[in-house]
Amino acid sequence: MKKKAKLFIIYFPVLLVAGQMATNCLYFISNTLYNQLGFYLNLTFGTNILFAIFLVVFTMRFKFCAVSRYAAIAQLLFAVNYLIVKQDNLYNILFQLTVGLLAIVLTFRHYINKFPLCRLSLFFSFMSSIISAKGHCQKGLERWEQTVSSTIEKKFNEGRL
Amino acid sequence: MKVGFSEIAAIVGIIIAIGGVISWWLSKLLYFRKEILELQFKVNRLQEDVNSLKHDVEKLQDE
Image (cartoon, rainbow over the protein chains, first blue to last red):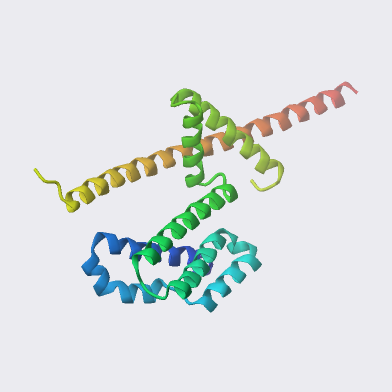
């Protein structure tokens, strides 16, 4: 339970950004539904400027939640943007979608670099090996195994395995 | 025949779902392969230790 609570705190900014992006996607999927639920969803996932500053400082200060640093910065950008635009229009929604997508991609990148032997990271390194082997599966798999073996050796030498 | 937004959304959803299932299955296989590589590495290290110990024992026996 304590571990789950810690995980929730670590990924809380990512959840907020993902929720905000899902709300913005609803604008394009069903405009009527967005008009009905948009207010409540924005109230749930949207953030105010002070809380966004707190999230940025929190993720910068504590290393254990560094993985969601980019999501916290995105939250701050959302808040600043809303301060300038002052209304829920298409420009605002597109800005949030672009910044949110960028933040999630950067969060993924950070996560993959931080945990190189997790399932997600293994999948992406396999895909990049296949691409670098120009679609040749056998060569790609051999390259991937070499990469994973060297990572295992590095982790073992660092005493983290 | 006119293709509406809901049909396109359904097709895209099905493609994403199939892609997700394949990715999940592939990542599981890759994780198993990584576990095997990890165990192989540990076995090799242990084998090296055993060989070096054997060498030490032989040396002591000679002495």
